[in-house]
Image 1 (cartoon, one colour):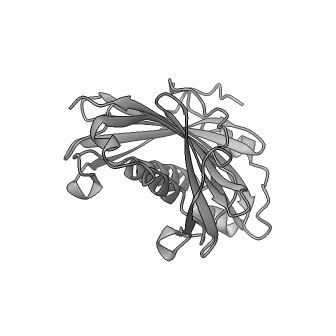
Image 2 (cartoon, helix red, strand yellow):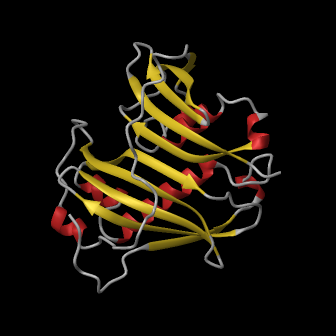
Image 3 (spheres, one colour):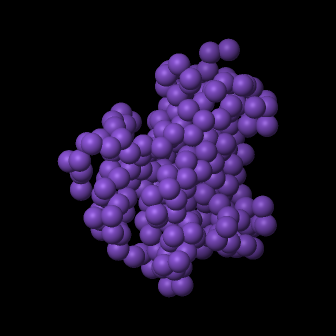
Length: 253
């Protein structure tokens, strides 16, 4: 569903500075931290329009992130002022898509992101129908030039897994494996020397089931093509909790 109402600009902007606590050893804002800010912006935008966490809780529903794609042209460095824009792109019966743009204070774009969200009943954990009319009022025609998330091939059949159990620090407000923690744990599968000469140009992630405290998992990584990695976090019986595709770029040093 696309909106024909162009009278109101319906994006949300938050601003932050890339302080040292957001950085990795290269002095760049980390991909997990970017993920945290995307979710924060999405939550703020939804809350201001009557379908945030508190509003959904009153209806015994919750938003769950289904797909995420982040494409970075350049990573912010220490103390850059970063403006993060978010807007609703499409609304359907079961899913809504949300876009993001990260830019500096002069308008230079660092990167874009696309995400797909669903609403679930918090008791049954089953999807619920979205209010297309209510959400559709906030659709914005602002362009997002990156590709939508595509199909991600399974990595669990191509590489042995590293065991891991979900811990307290992995959990979100709903008591489930935090969406950004998936990114952190998969990045840790790379040798640190790779980050000295490479940048992740595009990340795609598909969340397929919920992880809970103590759940035994395996983490998998397999090269699918030059400069591309297929990755997965699976339950021990090899059913995927998340799948992810990474594409990287050489970094100018």
